[in-house]
Image (cartoon, rainbow, N blue to C red; front, side, top):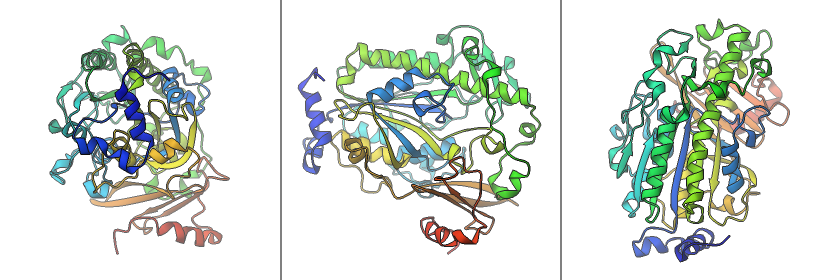
Length: 472
């Protein structure tokens, strides 16, 4: 690949050479060798073409995958928006941020923390945010800053579009409720009138304005978060007769701990046709978001920013579309804990490839710091992914850990799960309220809980040692 500036070549050297070279930018006090374009889609799972989904159309996520490395086994640390975002944007696990719900601002607990964008701001980068990066409620807080972190940014843009103004038209399983309730709308009008369309337009303007300086630009798309709103043309891409809704066998819920089940009464009451409509709407929202991503990527190419810009494309957590008979998030199954993750580094030799290395979202902070030539803060919980970017065949971590909370008789109960190369093992309340064990070699859908089978006692004992314990 040809480079537009000498600094771009320097950036490649910094990213691929040894530890001494990687700290040169730190030593000189100058901004590092790369820009960072950090793109996150809200509530996006791996129902994407590049991850092998047979129906969902995601040509622009696929384009990012062609430019970079696709991580096939990346996991969030908490499958809920605020705890997850607080974790990967601070580089700290949820038990260190102590953010376990959508109401607490992380600075209430760790006021001196230097966030990922703030780190780059302190290094001389222009830092900008468009849309949802730190948490705020969707759709209630669209157009506001919600639980944003002002000291992280030089400039923020809070788009608000037609989807917010036309909430009265949205169908919901619980009329008038949208954010945590299955709800959707095949909207009238154009892409550019929607909140994500406006966000893409504003992101392009910032790329144009700051193309000749070092920048860390974070673009947060709202879709496919509920309500699943997209122009109706996207719904037409997914005829109901082509939608396949996952099923569960009779008595399935009796085979797993009660705390593993998050099914709401209105979800349990859905008939097959309504389930298909929900899946159709989610897929439509993904493809609509993907189209807005494409507009941003077009600008990256037009402005020749591929030569000096790292691109990260990811989500805050996974999402259920009736796998295990469940919907949405906040479970410790694979579908809820696993996230799409794609990283593009200019000149990378493994562009277009994938890796099965086990990685975590908390690894993003040290990775981006190292790639741009800076020494990451010493207190980070994650591990740099630069070695895997250089060699996708590396195995990654021994395990990824995800946690979640439940309220039981007004007490907070923690569930922890560990994902290794072969196994997923979960304990609820240190195992006092249930355990789960799944063999991904023979059961990749995690439908057969082996925790009560004595022949796996030794496996569970080993995996249990990898989990945090709260009552010891």
